[in-house]
Image (tube, rainbow, N blue to C red; front, side, top):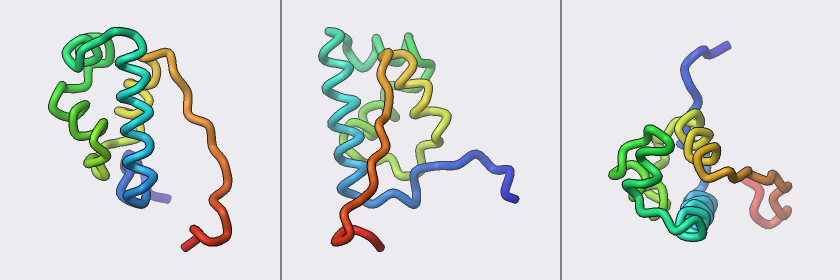
Amino acid sequence: MDDRPANLSHIDEPTLRALGADLLRARRGRGWSQRDLQAASGIHQSRISRAERGLAPGMRITAVASLLAALDAEVTLKPRSRANRG
């Protein structure tokens, strides 16, 4: 078993972009700047910016969890459609 922290490298680009858009919407919904989210989550503003643009495939799952906790948000899992399965 691999003990290294998991990251988002195995997630496809459309899913990363959708996650980023959801993070952006949640942050703006709270009326926060990226700096506000940095202060609440401990994740650097530049990483938040990249994540919101769907450009963070190397981001660790723990960092995503920190952002979600700071935003009081959650992720909902759903199966991919058969057409989108790899």
